[in-house]
Image (cartoon, rainbow, N blue to C red; front, side, top):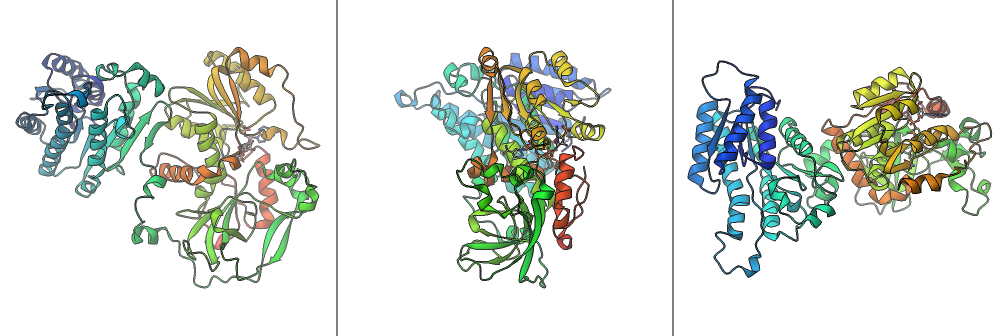
Amino acid sequence: MELKPGLSALVTGGASGIGKALCLALAKKGVFVTIVDSSEERGKEVAGLAEKECAEFHSGLKFPVVMFIRSDVTNTGELKAAFEKHCTTYGGLDICINSAGIGDYVQFHNDQTDGSKSWRHVVNVNLVAVIDSTRLAIQAMQTAQKPGVIINLGSASGLYPMFTGPIYSATKGGVVMFTRSLARFKRQGIRINVLCPEFVQTDLAEKAAASSIARFGGYLPMKLVVEGAFELIRDESKAGSCLWITNRRGMEYWPTPAEEAKYLLRSSKARKKSLVTVPMDLQIPHSFEKVVVHTLSHNFRSATRIVRTELRLPLKPDHVLLKVIYAGVNASDVNFSSGRYFSGNGKDITSLLPLDSGFEAVGVIAALGDGVRNLKIGVPAAIMTFGGYAEFVMVPTKHILPVEKPDPEVLAMLTSGLTASIALEKAAQMESGKVVLVTAAAGATGQFAVQLAKLAGNTVVATCGGYEKAKLLKDLGVDRVIDYKVEDIKAVLKEEFPKGADIVYESVGGEMFDICLNALAVYGRLVVIGMISQYQGEHGWKPRNYPGICEKLLAKSQTVAGFFLIQYAHLWQEHLDRLVNLFSSGKLKVAIDPKQFVGLHSVADAVEYLHSGKSAGKVVVCVDPTYAKQPAKL
Ligand code: NAP
């Protein structure tokens, strides 16, 4: 639903806290607002403030743009009267926000009363009244026969116990499950969602123990809660959705698809939808081609060649055969071909040759071993094991990542997307409200890092080389793009971010690493993602010394953390689901470099193109154009 002047909203608990902030934010968009609250003094004060905001959009109306209605939400008669007054004044109800709530400061187990003035009252305000108000809102929206959105205020304590407030936690858990169970109203055009923020600085939260607030990383900015509510209003795909907002992780839908999958079998309809049609004439050949490393060298072209190899069937019982459609190109392909990934294991690396190259691929399952029960032929799948630069790959089922489509965008979410998603969460420990600096930001992994940092509510600064890349980054929502071909990175950072960057996602290495380290804020975390500028020197990778680094880090309590995706395989499926979810709901864009590389003979060209510094987004090789779709360009 587009938030525009002339819509109307009823907000319970609108006289204070989150309810008040939402009333003012809605009024700022020209939305007519009815504030329902038991506190007359505060309610009228908020109504006065909201009226000033909303009046800017309207003139000459015969009705008030904002109303305050005194009502106790636990009194169903009073609540019903408030809804009726709203609907007769504004001709219906577009948005209802149930924000009225109270804390639980009683020791219910010591309570000698019937609880009507203590714990039972908390249940009545926080849960029973939310159910009642949702009921009245649904009826009002059904009568008006117009689409509507209802947002119930849950809490992070509805997802995780609040040990200092068990009754409060119970009511919020109830609100979460009640709301999630109402997803089906979407069919009638009514979307009901629940917002679960952690502590926001309101009167209610101030009574909570300071120690609990500290454990959650401090108060959440109200701005983020308003953004979350607006997202639930605007995003038509959200119904029965629970948006969890934290200082540490930003906005996140709960449960994640991976968690959700544990409760339900996917419907046959959903499963059918996810299958791509594999032509019946798909023949499994007797042999296939792949790119192998035959000589160790950081020069990928001279290190590799295409070989034809026999395709032996039957497969091992727990193996599947993946027909590759797209293979992903990575900066580190040259580190693989130079043997860097295998050095240090004590073996003579040359004894491992030839090595199957390529880190990732998407395609369809073409054959199954006898023991495979959970996969089917024709199902799209991804792999993130060595050997992606091939027409076919045989892998144990544990290496198969089921995906909806074997598309370049999904491929980009594998190594590149997962690196950004997991590194920002685990190594950078990303929160909201920070300054996040991303280098090589228009590259395959950088594009994900900037968007995820932005989605989590941060100010994002990004470096890149070239006008087109800068344009892409602006389109992705970056706050400050530094095109190093026209601006001096050091000078810009010093002048515009004098306190420094709290998080740096650093992929370039060399001089860029030095610049980033010098621009790191007190307590800052610099995550070493890679050092692409060092991979292809004349004689290969030369490790660098960083004299004085300990003194620098010590002086500012800073951290330099390494991140290597292979060590986080246990998180791949969960983060891939998150990325796919963000992509399908339109919150995440995936840029694929438009230069086309078709067939295995183009792999070396593609690797060199990536290292030329000209690419933007993910570089992909289409291994089999018969099944390919046109690469999407932002
Ligand atoms: P990418 O970012 O798409 O790489 C291309 C970009 O890197 C170029 O467009 C250029 O961007 C920059 N670049 C290329 N060569 C350079 C050079 N010689 N000097 C300076 N900048 C250069 O590639 P990617 O595959 O996504 O990899 C990016 C980085 O992430 C690499 O360091 C890679 O090793 C690392 N990575 C790490 C992990 C992990 O697990 N740690 C996983 C995946 C990738 P600008 O000129 O616009 O800056």
